[in-house]
Structures are given as C-alpha cells and as structure tokens.
Image (tube, rainbow, N blue to C red; front, side, top):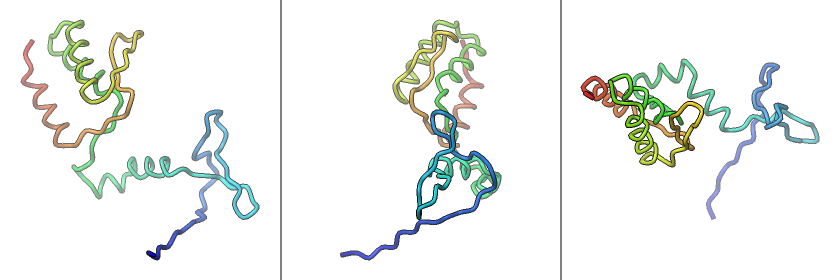
Length: 135
C-alpha cells in the first residue's frame, strides 16, 4: 500500500465573492461545523493563468484559450477579402476540426462549444499565414 499525504488548506481571502454559483451567490461548504467560502480549483487556476506573475514566468510560452477561434478566423478571412458566406463556411470547418461548431444566428458566425487552447507557436504561425492570405 502506498503512503500519501492529502492536504486541506484554509486560506484567508479579502472580502470578495470569488466564486459564484448559478444564482450569483457565493459558493459555500460546511467545514469543521462552520460555513466557509468555497473557492473552486477552476477559479484558482484561472486566477493563476491570468496573473502578471504567471505571464512573466512563462513569457512567450502561454497559449491562447478561446471558444471563439472560428469567429476570429471568419473575421480574418473577411478582412482579407473572402466573401462572407465562404468565410463562414471555412470557419465552420475550422471549428468542426477543433471541436463541434455551434452556429451563432445573431452574428452570422460560429464558435466552438468547448474552449480550445492554441499553443503560442501555432498562434504566431497563424498570424504569419494571415498576412500571406489572398482572396
């Protein structure tokens, strides 16, 4: 049998609604007989990802997270002179390749149903490809 240590930490946070449920109320948990504010691991990871310290430590090695990759692709294609209908068709193909596309009828464009992450290298190569695009 393997020995492991499991830590449960109580951390003091300033008065703020760090993590909300679907109704906007702070998430709570009863711990040690007292109701305490609960901070999800997702909210902590997001705070780390968006912090200035994290950005400095990983300078140039942070990917881009977006559920709007297809929308951004369609915008770039249209800016480069591709007709709207064709640009949206191509954007749908991109979204389908990266994950299931969801049609946004109001804005006549698409977005991914899941958040996708693009590596910085891929992101910079897509920028250079954008500059070489011809209609």
